[in-house]
View 1 (spheres, rainbow, N blue to C red):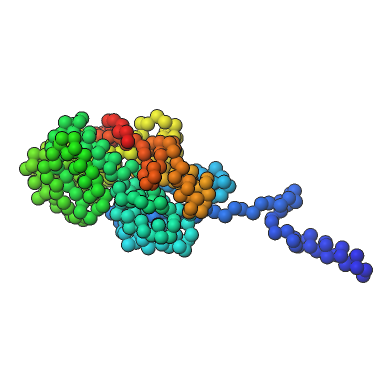
View 2: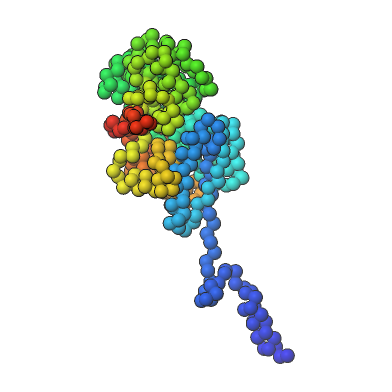
Length: 390
């Protein structure tokens, strides 16, 4: 066989075998299909077990909804987002362990979560050391983001909400004296108690007693009797279930007649519908109001109900907003450094819980709302009272 005949045979075999064509072709047109772009890996650190499970689940529902929406729309710059979920069990040591895995082994671009201040404070040093940004949906302690370029949040901080509830109690409810009950195991509770006390006193009010308790306590009679004896016109209880519902129930048993108040940790069904009828007319600071007429809010509520069959609460909304902040930041670039750059650029970003501007300390500047717990048939719900500006 002549050399030109051998070359023809070899060329034909190459066509049949697809040699030299590294991209798949469309069988009907013969065109090459572009290779799929790699996914953007994002870590999620939440309590998927333990006493804070309901908060973790609500937050995750919001995050997952937003990520599914952007993936369905084609992703960020043509790249889909892949969530890598880790259960921190609400524990600080576990939080550090799973964060190290996500940052060092999984090579994520950023981490959404944790949700508590204590767990978020536990990863401050790790985030800075491994240079992977964290966006906490609900960690409000002032120290979480302080002097750390890798720590962010989608919620307001304790300085804002402590002052907000103090001003409402003093100026609107006309309370001149207040008592505080503090979870001594919680940076969230201790930080908020400090900020409330400072703001209430600066307004001219008096904090007549401050009582402490430990997580997993079930009996609060001695502390509540001291509160009742103090004649405090309101009792501020910054905390979470299971302790907060028990405190609200037991305050009625010992005869304390004044209304209690709380912060964003109260905005959950475990508190609102797990505290008995003594929750009636109690008030709290919230980050989310379902009656907000902005399209971004009403679209979120519609989509959340369609997927989960129920209305969203504050933690679902803040989870959604933390994912929205990240998506916007990823448009700048997908490396951790570019995510940080993108987060710092957020200015009046139209989110579900308000228009978000990120300041130099990683905090968000936005409004909050005062909500009152009122009967709703055989259950309870929250009623909007007023908006608090930063």
